[in-house]
Image (cartoon, rainbow over all chains, first blue to last red; front, side, top):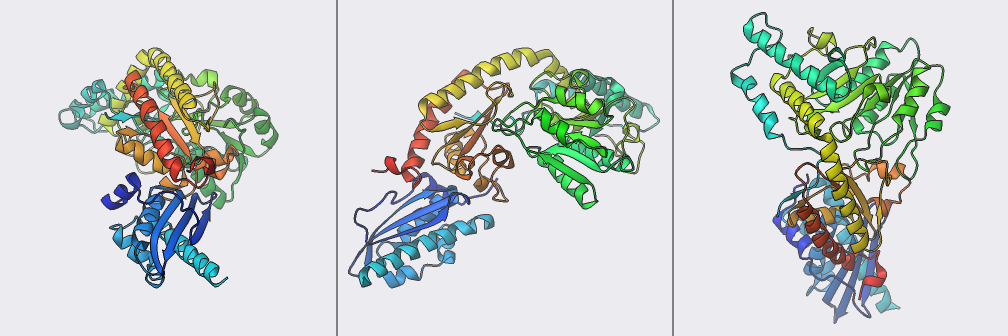
Length: 125
Length: 388
């Protein structure tokens, strides 16, 4: 069986920031049903700062835990700071992930970055 | 509450089995091949176990080869027949839903220039006899089809298939690792030439298996270096394990009818309870032609590993065919072969009941799982209407 850290288990059992945001500043969606992971990230940005982040995920324990942690990390950060969150930072914050689950952390980062790109696109539109 | 519903993975050793094994670690520790009294004692014990395992499946003692596991039995049967009979032909027939021990042995044989046909199954996880008839060729030497599927519990039509193989002189290997101990087996009725069993699936110890080889049948041994097991399998025998296997087989013979009657009631209670309490859930596998211990469901919109981990946190142990719980990240090949969509396969849960399973445990699962599903569905982008 895969060994998850206590922190991963905590974020799986008690995920933070589950749900959607009405009139979000940006939305990012990644993954597909075939690979078994789908993540949606919703951001509320005020004056360049991410004031709220929410997620919905269809995926394994690691996918749920990384989604939850990404929203936690993103909240309160500026857009630039949030763009700097890497998968290594995320894995580190979760006290590690089984190597076979690294792709989940990549998905989490991708979802966040896509949501930020969406925000930027909307802003410049 | 601690609820073990993963008996298809393994079962606990019966207390009677442990008692039977106990003398063979330290007191009666002899090597069965030794010429002295300790050797004789160990040999006698093995022969008694051989008779016990033989009577579990309606075979004769001389038709039982003890091996190291169910996987070892499958490997010996498939590679052994292939190499022994390769001059007669190099074609093997199996199904897409076999255990990896069979599938990987066949894939390895393909690299040795054997040809293998992997038959599809229907949506219930059952292979069609007519498909077998259609793919058998002049050069077919072996058909290997499991008795009951380990994931979805579907029972395969072995008796009809054996009519096709026996009239053509083709070896029929049956992987009965999941059915041994679960439903009555008679090798004569089934018409099997080879049949694999594993001790730890029927309340015996891990590390022991058996291969039935019909009298008059022959294969190339796979392990070389000793005369043990009639030369079919060189290795000093695992005497305590084999003794335990024998006692476990004997207990199955005594209890199988009572056990399976009881499990059928609990299985159907769990199945119906899940269907009633959880919306958008489906049963995987055949409704009637299935193991009395197996309930396999897919929960729409939710991924299996998340459910397994939440259930584990609540003390309930079961398994999933989701890719995400597997180390290779591939979804269950069995569910895929049944034509089940990826996201539904990812949401599968397997509960396998056993001797220790009680009605209270089933009630507990029915109480706990709906809330877990609800929690995970709120999180899921695949369940749009449920998100506020």
